[in-house]
Image (cartoon, rainbow, N blue to C red; front, side, top):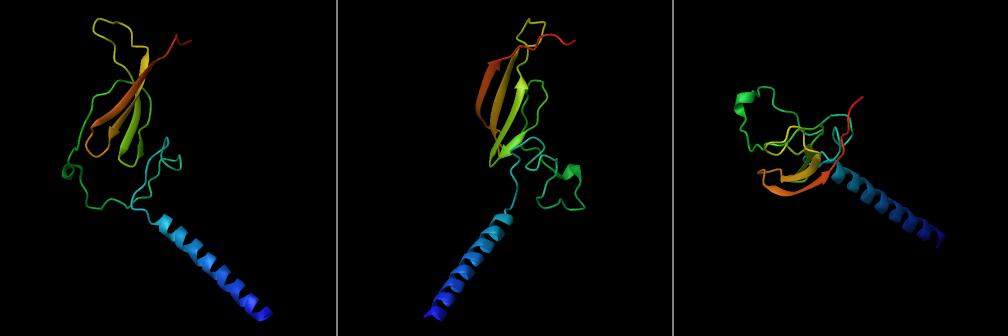
Length: 128
């Protein structure tokens, strides 16, 4: 009876180990990376998706979409098919100083369709 209990325990441990290793392998073969943080998933500006082909030239690419946004300093975050960014609203017609409003924008990454935006007041003050 003691021998049977050891065999059952060993089988259970083996099964759990196989499940764990399978889960790790499945998670590591994702086809592309999201870019959810500043400078990417590891915050270091690196990309672990497949490399571009060596004979690639810029004139072989097609621009998918383009949007005009306000100024600012920020990076783009990509999660799934959503692209997030921040900008400063442009001055209204006749305004001399920059707008003191910023916004967060969300676009569909595949076609550039605007999904939502949120703007909010900011106080820039003066430098110095």
